[in-house]
Image 1 (cartoon, rainbow, N blue to C red):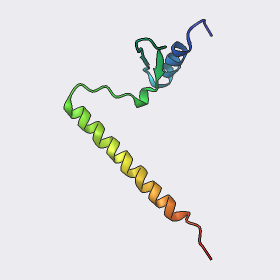
Image 2 (cartoon, rainbow, N blue to C red):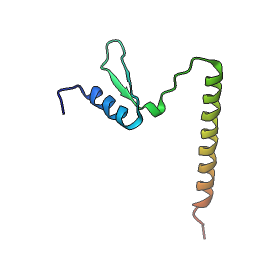
Image 3 (cartoon, rainbow, N blue to C red):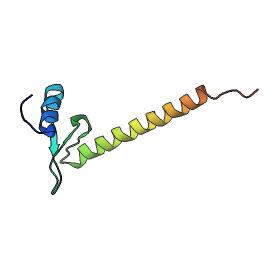
Image 4 (tube, rainbow, N blue to C red):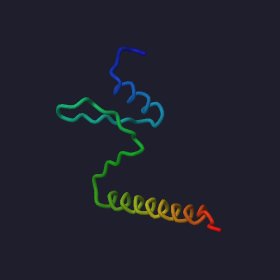
Length: 78
């Protein structure tokens, strides 16, 4: 590949996969490419509310899956 920094190469790969990429530039630190499926840009309260509801739904589903799994695989004591 060309002589590009690692974050730049990752950003190009993410852009090819997802159609977009995000690079975080922090003062005094190296640039960092982040997963665009985990980035939320919100400019209004409605978007934030929908995102919070989605996150809560995922949390509840994960919690329910954990409960089901723990019940399913409890070893029997004889």
